Amino acid sequence: NAGVMQNPRHLVRRRGQEARLRCSPMKGHSHVYWYRQLPEEGLKFMVYLQKENIIDESGMPKERFSAEFPKEGPSILRIQQVVRGDSAAYFCASSPGANSNQPQHFGDGTRLSIL
Amino acid sequence: SQQGEEDPQALSIQEGENATMNCSYKTSINNLQWYRQNSGRGLVHLILIRSNEREKHSGRLRVTLDTSKKSSSLLITASRAADTASYFCATGSPIQGAQKLVFGQGTRLTINP
Image (cartoon, rainbow over all chains, first blue to last red; front, side, top):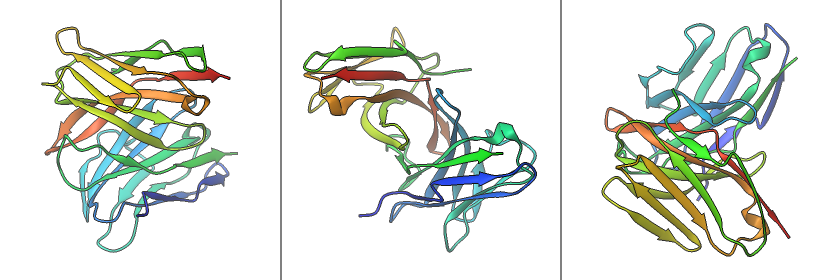
């Protein structure tokens, strides 16, 4: 039973480039969440998606960041024109449905480094 | 603002001892969850305790919840070197039936052999 799969595990980009982070939820899960973790800190919510819908993006910066979860394929977190401050670990989590008493299952994250 | 705040920020104990970590939060909750994060890895769900529960056990883990004090504790008994990790509490902020988790900064637990 594969868990939440994120790739790449490590991503290095130069300032101004684009970063694309991918997340495949657990089998049977249709709800995806993205979180960002800065060094020595807890995770901060970014966005919650269901298939083809963004439900809550209140934690996403207004510019340069976007997320999608298409009908087919993984969820994508896209960061355009990256800056040094985007360096962080980005985690994806999934859950089977909209039940607040179900835990979220996390992937191992993508560590983004901006040169 | 931070919902969950863990205390202490770092804890170092000898193998075999018990480890207690505390978490405080600010608003009303449906449930509170504890997660473990090993270095360089994602979060692993440990226990979910609902707002109408006071205590929950899972193996060597014991979680308590005091909604009147808006606090929770995680006790790991008979600690092992493999328990070395960061531990986070998280509360859920509802969004259309699901929830976005709000994490504290975590407690870094080190078990010395």
